[in-house]
Image 1: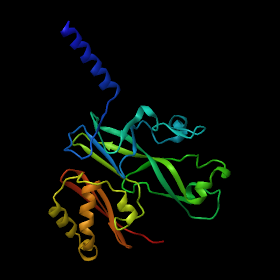
Image 2: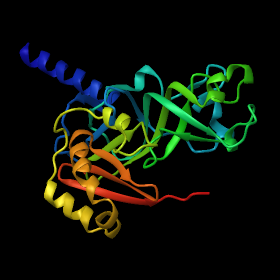
Image 3: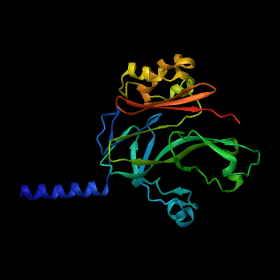
Image 4: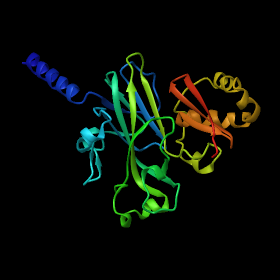
Amino acid sequence: MKNILGYYLFLIMMCILQNNYCLAQKLEKMPQLHTDQVWISSVPTGLNIYFAKDTTTGNLDEESSKVYNRKENRFFLMQNKYLKGKTPILLNSVSPGKYLIGIEPVDLIIIKKSRDPNAFFDDISFHNSDPTHKASAVITPIPLGGSSSLLKPFQQGKFKNTAVAYSFSKSDSAGSCFIILTSTDSTITDVKTKALYPKGNNYEFDDTKLKNSLMNNGYIALHLESQIPEIINYLHRGGKVIAGDKNTEFVVELVRPYKWVIDMRIKVVN
């Protein structure tokens, strides 16, 4: 009898694993990552994460009704069945492939290029979506193409409680880390940006080696050396920072414990 019960329990667990291909685990500190694991976090933490296979083809004419319900203003990813929990979160048993990661709530900043209250799409740019990730969709409380009478938040330049969906490719060679910034117009020298970071030593790395990596960049060594102590501090706390000055900004991000990437960007002023 015990063997039979054990067998049925095994079958039940297999069904759970097949139906929920990525089991979520709540952790505060990024662990060493196995090949089939994905660490997802954000600054600030505590935001909802949705995760699903990306089945879209990019052809909105063919699949617009499947991807986006215009009447209900609902993007397919933002459903309870795809909700994995709140950041930071560790997903297990993730097979290689293309995925979508949705995050909410985000206060989206909208910059209009003209004064036309009814101008959309080419007339606007979105801020507070992470510039280091590819945004596949922005889900606002009301359709951006809706009646102008509904678009007071749009005209004021801000939507509260929006969601952003990002494209993510999982390789078969290593575990993955995906950290999302939700305040991207300010560097860590900004007091409001600093307040978003969680407390604690949540990301491990060698401070001296990271400092040496930063100092090997001539621009950082010449102009931004004074920011390095704060970069190290907030990287331990949030795993990702944007730093820089009026001419240049750079992103420092942990991709796994003791391994990081540094991406420098020259600001273009029109």
